[in-house]
Image (cartoon, rainbow, N blue to C red; front, side, top):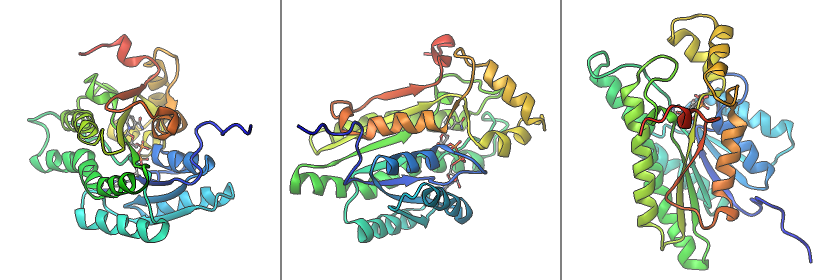
Length: 280
Ligand SMILES: NC(=O)c1ccc[n+]([C@@H]2O[C@H](COP(=O)([O-])OP(=O)(O)OC[C@H]3O[C@@H](n4cnc5c(N)ncnc54)[C@H](O)[C@@H]3O)[C@@H](O)[C@H]2O)c1
């Protein structure tokens, strides 16, 4: 008897948000898109940045992975998300996996942050997850009713909602919106538990993605990427930051049939940070 390959995505279609990367190298969404395709999935990747999409397309090309379609989409805008979902359906005819990866942090507490920044953070990190679920869940439900195969949603949160001083700064809106992702995921999972859809969350810790060099070095006022990277490595009990592939593998697992009994929960990918610094 021929054994089925583990974590196979053959015959599945994945819709991945933030499928680009903010700089050269591997962001979480870009690595996830490529890893799902390596496992056999057809990938529909959306990103607000055309250049980032082109870089992901190039990564598919370099690995001779054929099944890629990228589209510019702002996931904070319902019309834009609906259009992207329609395009994905026109191209592939189904959606089995939804990865809500878009997100980013802005520093500040209630007095140091503007109201506009607060609202933009909630939109980027939480409303974006609501919108893509709003447009994709009915498709997964219809698939389940038609032939018993619904889908899996994997949302990306952050340990920034479990330990409240990361990189020496407080980011109240990021913490609140990423905590919202956990509650949203669990409640949506229960709403869809009998409709063939699983919903889970990956919680990355301090990861070495291009974001570190591209944005954090200047945001944290150090101007010295090497120093920041050394400090981030030293802050992790396991001895080093994780990378985008660590996040991508966790997403792959939760999206896979092997995780078929897992829903309404989280997978923390943080090298031990939250256990060493428990907050609640
Ligand atoms: N890098 C880390 O250390 C870390 C840690 C914890 C959690 N995370 C989370 O992982 C996710 C990805 O992080 P990353 O470091 O790979 O970031 P990244 O900035 O490299 O990638 C995010 C992508 O999302 C795109 N994007 C931004 N706004 C968008 C919008 N409105 N619509 C569509 N696309 C949009 C960007 O253009 C970019 O290509 C985020 O949710 C982040 O909060 C990252």
